[in-house]
Length: 91
Length: 368
Image 1 (cartoon, rainbow over the protein chains, first blue to last red):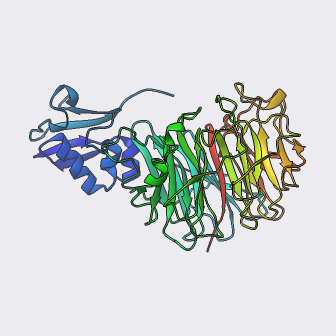
Image 2: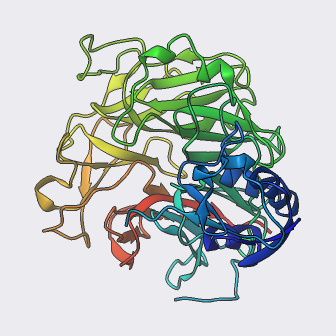
Image 3: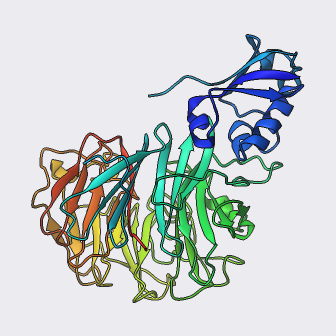
């Protein structure tokens, strides 16, 4: 299932990712695994050791907060747009 | 001063700044009058930098409240950075998590790929492959005295790691607030080394552990001697930390964060006293570095060229000496000034200003 994922600049710069990456993934968890395979180390920046997303990393699947869907098990449909967004706070 | 493409050359003085907003590298020939600089990791908070002379590498302890703790390494003097550092966290089943990395230190030359890291929540981690993968050092992270550790102003942090350059198995680690520890077997076992150090904030002012050590240093020519800036005073140990003597007399305050040692004279140390302990600014608004040339028995105020009417804060890793003769001394402030002395602290000038809050200052001699 090919989806488009928006990579935040701070980690995109570190790992050499483009602003938009096309990824073959059926769930959010698989998307993170694929990104980590393409950009080794990126997975640890996004998720905790137990596999859940870091607290201040937001994911929107076709505009919906993945935490209001099925979290890491949220299914991705063909052509879905996935935004990985850092929480906005601080100075 | 800015220079996009040139990089440090062999034998240059490399001055590494960690700031709240990224990493800044400065470099110069040993005259130290014409500095170039470059910026890296903007958006990340850099708590510490180390130069690894064994490989000519730079390690940066970078952090993000969103993406966590990330050790980055450059093998080309900052031109490119490698950010793969798997496993810099406690086991998944533990409640505690690594939220920031506060220190990265190359290991003993006998173990050329060994690197140590210290973190918040306080933990010691070891890498045997130059930071690509990390393993928690359970012997310290789960030490029987661990229950006495409690967070200070920066959280519960392991902020200082000192491999003894003269003994491959000996390494020191410091926790705030937990105290100093020493291992004689490469980190397999640890013993607290805090005897004689006050902890005025605890009911028992001389506990075995729980002291708030702010920074500790040793000199490779006299490795049995340790100097420590503690929350409650400046101390020296002449026996690898077994016992400590208070050397604060003569300073305007017992409190401060950094301590640095002269590169060629193991009897000379530098501190920056701050008004204790709720204010934490330069006493009476006078920026000054204090130097002892006799193991802390006498102190001299060094302020020529440093500002008054300046209520500054200098954090634990924000002072360093270089390897030149006469030695350079560098101090960074939480308000983004970088002060520099080319003559061992006698005279000072502003090397850079308008930087983000400076968390760490360290130096290296660029290898060929």
